Each structure stands twice: as C-alpha cells, then as structure tokens.
Length: 560
Image 1 (tube, helix red, strand yellow):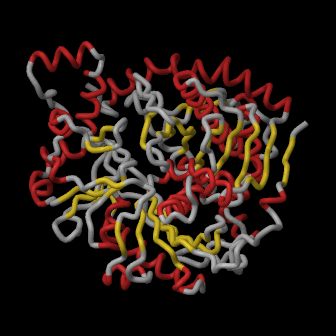
Image 2 (cartoon, rainbow, N blue to C red):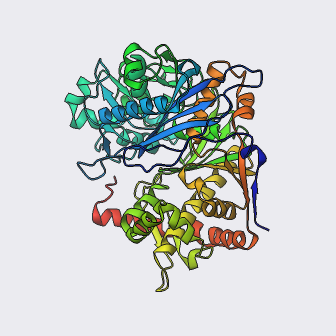
Image 3 (cartoon, rainbow, N blue to C red):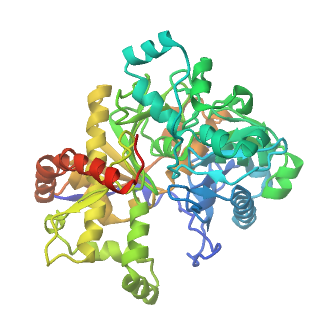
C-alpha cells in the first residue's frame, strides 16, 4: 500500500513561520507566526540570521535554536547573463546589494528583539568565482558555476618524471580537464588585465562574508575548480596544482571550518545588512552540503536529495572516498572532518523553470487566475499522467555529465498521444532516474546502503514529486518540517560554533523533524524499476557515440 504519514513532531508542537513575505516580484504569502521564545529551561530563545544565496533567489531566514523557521524573505536575482556561448556571468555587486536588502528586510520584519540574535550564518551556491580588489570590490562580473567556458592549448607543467607519474596514476585526463575548466587559466589568457587587478579570488559566500566583516576568509568546505586538497580540507600543499590551474596561493583567502566563528559584523556591515554590530559570523558549507546537514542525514544509510536548480543525491562519510572517473564528487561536509559524496545533475529543477518558460504559457495564465504558482498547477495535472509517462523517457543532461562534456539531454519514446504534461512528468521522472543511478554508484564505492531518503529544495513541496521519488527509488522518502534545508544546515553549524549544542547529533536531534513520509506504491515502483534497469541505464551507452558525433559535426560543445 502506498503510504503518506504525517508525523506529530512536524505538526502541532510548534507553529512554522518562514512563509516568504513580499519581495521583489513576489506575491504575498500570508502572515508569519512565531514559536514561543523560551527554551526548555525558561531562557530566552536564541535566533540565527541565515543568508542563503541561491542561483535564482537570495533568501534571508530567521531560525531559532530549535530549528523553527521563524521568518524568511526571498528576492529573485537574475541567474546569469551570457556575452558568449557557454558563458554564464553574474553581476556580483548587484547580487551583494540584493543580499543586503533582503537581509535588512527580514531582520526588521521578523520583529525578533535584536538582543536575541546570536549569529549570522552564510550558505550559498557554489563554484562561482568573484575576483575582487584590495577593498573587496569586484574587478569584473562573477563567473558562475553554470559557466562552461574552457581554455584550450595548455600543457601540463613539469618534466618527464612528473608526466610519467600522471600517466601511471591515470590522472592525466582528469588533470587536463581541470586545467581546461579553470577560470584562472581563462582569465590569464583572455583577460590578463582582470587577473592582474585581482587582489584575491572569492566565492559568493566569502564575498558576502567580506561585506559583513571586512575580512577575507572562506570555508574549508569550498567547492569548485580551486587548488583544494579535498582530503585534507585545505589549500593544496603541492605547487604543481597551482601551476595546473593557473593561480597563485597569495590570491586565495585563508580557510576556516564551517562550524567555527570566522569573524564579527563590522560597523559598516551592520549598517549595510541591518544586523547588530559585533555579531559572530559563520561561513557555512556550500548550499548542497548544508542541505545534507539540514536534513539530519548524519549517518551513511540516509541520503539527502536536493531538488533545486541543480539536483543532487548525497550521503555523509567519515572517510574520504573518491570515484576514479568522477561519477560522483567528494567535498568537505558541513560537519568538520567529514565528507559529502555527491551525485550531481547540473540542471536539475532548472529544467522545471525551463519547461515553464518555454512550454507552459497556458498554465501560467490559468495559475494566475487560481492564485497559485504555475509549478503547483503543473504538479497537480501531472498526477493524471501514469507512471512512466506512457513510454516517454528523459535523460536529463541539459547540462553535461561532469565526466563527459559532450553528453547531451535526450527524450525517447514519443508518439502522437503525448502532450506537454507527459514531457513535464518525464522531466521529473528522468531526474529521479539519474539520481538513482548516481546513488547506486555512491553505494557501490563507499560500501554504504541507503535505506531512507530525505528531500529538500523547491521540488520537495510537491506531494506528487515526493511520491514519484519514493516510487523510482523504492525507498521510504521523507519531507522535513522545512524545505529550506540549506539554511537550516547553516543554522545548525552556527549552534555548534556557539556551543549551544555540544555536538552535531545533539543539534540535529533538537533542530530537525520529519514531517511526512512517502512509501513506494507497489505497482508504480515495479514499472519504474523495469524502466530504470531495462531502458534508462541503457540510454547513455547507446547515445554517447552520437553525442560525440554531434559535437564533431556542429562544433558544440568544443572537444579536444
């Protein structure tokens, strides 16, 4: 029998606030409720300001020490602009101004007494590079994680012995790909004046941190094509790594743990962000690592799925495990001295936005009349489509696989009876198939066994998406008391940094609650299992030669 269980700890013991208030271009979501502002021993509740910088929205939340989302606001931001094919850049100064605006507004409108704020915690989207001068001002637009530009014609540094070592260890192809992807190399070759003017390279998180504290620091859980020793969670000790990526160590900030106080709000930061001066600031992990912590997935038998702009499946590991062909990636976790094993779909629920923009004008008009979001209407209508979308199967590589730049998205199985809604459901199913594939690889190489899924991000708000996820994986799938898991994860980091809780298990036990559980529907799970094993897993091997041929003929994407 299918199951959808409502958990008492997620409904009734507190009043959940955090319903976004009216921001730029947003509709009013209704009143905000505040939980009782005292903890179990009668002390005044501590509150945490969390800045959650996404690709398409910048959010500011107020969480209390019990994990209640007291208040939140979200302002949209232009995700990127492209001056050339494959480019994806963002106005870092504008991004910062919107961050300051939404934070000021959230702090003011939350009506939380200022002396109850305990810290500011930061989590943002990852792998975006912000080159800044000595004053922290960007010298050019940020290069975002969606940017796919590459630098061709480079040679790996070192003599014959080093080249031999690269070949023996099988690292040459990976190192060459990282060298091509490095934005430092691109800037050196095509914008040397920008590179020379750069005092230090920041990420979105460290750019916000500098604006708050007037200090240059970043999280040791940094993600991206940086000279990072991911095993040691530090800047790499080998000079050759900096040579391969084309950056000097002096142009990179000091790294701090995501669960330690990194600095304090300066006088200028207090004015710009509207937060109390002197407040401790924590640079949390990136958004996806923070989501894993916010989901309470702190054992390796519980995986977190993030349905955001990028979709990921991830587990926590107390040891460093890497995949030799980069089928999954390994980064520092939001918990110090731990790692996240992450399978990544670059344009995950970005595809929902893409579908809405390109194909759902009718639903947009209908949703406006009903007073709901178009995605909610699409998800309702999707329930009318049977499991498997009447044979429509989608491979969600609208952004190429990490280890195969020529790979492309594909849909197979069309007939004259298929509608736009079949395509929409196939998108949801295709993303779930790919995450299941990645989850199986993670389990195989880590020795873990996933028994439960916890889901965050915008997609988790839909009952049908939650149920499809449970059916595709054949696993118990849980929705938490908030969908804003990255922000909650950053708040958890802050409570441990301030020693409100002695350790992460204690913090998670107090701050994370499962609200609903979806169990697989037997018949649908059977259909999905066969489609996954007998069709989906065979699509990529069958289509991959064609992807390379397309790139060869059209020149897009450029391959070497």
